[in-house]
Image: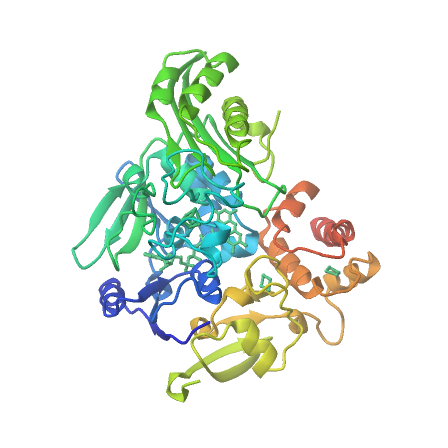
Length: 338
Length: 161
Ligand SMILES: Cc1cc2nc3c(=O)[nH]c(=O)nc-3n(C[C@H](O)[C@H](O)[C@H](O)COP(=O)(O)OP(=O)(O)OC[C@H]3O[C@@H](n4cnc5c(N)ncnc54)[C@H](O)[C@@H]3O)c2cc1C
Ligand code: SF4
Ligand code: FES
Ligand code: FES
């Protein structure tokens, strides 16, 4: 690692001021992503501002009709919190499908939203990468692009956003609370992460030095019918090739509300509202799930080594919809169940 | 290294207090191994990918390679060197021997610390769940089946106790 200054934050405003004092300032929470990137010299902050001293809020608190998650709480404490397990089991399952138990004990909710892509070229400072060094080109487009995106790519970047937790937050319609030089903001989850477009160096719409303080979940947690399915190269402790979060509200045999979010296929958690509207009022059958998958994957664009992804995603959507009908049958580690 | 950057940090490791002056960029793993001569904890990948460096901090299993020592002021740390009591092996250590749960032994300290953390968390019931919650510890020698056998023996023992 390079030499840098370390500062433990004493308050939210202190953290914001400290990190903004240097153009190269960064927050550190669990450290599981930023320290790793620093070891590869991909991140080179001049000062690291530790936000852990701000972790005085409850992990989960009642808020409006829903709940508020602390940004500084660990992924493990969030996933195993009785309120989350009971009211938002999709979120619990998605978090537990990510990384390993040790990493989840360290990783925080705020840090999870801001983890960076696992694109191999982004990590390798000897190769061109527009996300790491704007204007140098994208090594992945003509390189080994097996893990890369099939939706929403640009000619400048085809990277995937790797979080599992965020796929569930997208499906649940979370809101991100922030605080910064410009004051507090509430950002709907769909507007939080970005597509690469002409600025792949920007993963999200946070302002420079803006701090995430909490994540709000709306009242409806879809605890009756939900599933998270993660397909990957090994059964556990690997990033998704494709992951799917599905939640339903059912009225007898009919779907009164459906949400489907995908991970591993785009630069942000992927939701297609047309597909969700299509399912509304329909019976919960494989034919309807397949038609919804068709809508979601329209316009998929593949690259040399990831042409398997649209078919994998199509099958994963159908399977996950079936799993959501009987959540009790789900296996540990978000693996496929019958 | 610029001396003025050293930060005085105190924590306990295996119930012993340490006060160290560390650079901000020193990982807890490097401080333990290089400065404190606590070499039981292993460095496999140094990037959070293998679990060899697993220790318990305030009772929770975490990775010491992705932990900055300066961020652990006041922490209570337990490593593989601290789990035997009064010269008697920790039951998991004995179970690993009984089940032949290692070949080269390099992943073992991390496996055992991780298993202690996992049993304390109390979230795994079935063997499949134990495997899932131990997936953060890789074994290049492929002793995994015996590792899970050893852990299951202790887990079931605890369940019957
Ligand atoms: C081997 C390995 C495997 C993994 N596998 C998975 C996986 O399968 N699925 C998955 O989803 N994730 C996976 N992860 C990623 C892991 O989930 C993230 O590294 C973690 O969530 C990041 O949280 P953190 O608190 O450690 O963030 P840090 O590393 O501390 O910070 C990450 C970024 O967020 C910023 N930041 C942190 N907190 C705040 C805040 N409150 N406000 C503003 N900025 C903030 C930091 O400045 C930094 O830029 C894996 C990680 C590793 C190392
Ligand atoms: S896909 Fe994006 S992150 Fe990967 S090399 Fe191209 S620009 Fe960089
Ligand atoms: S050395 Fe820490 S996880 Fe491999
Ligand atoms: S015993 Fe050799 S790596 Fe596990």
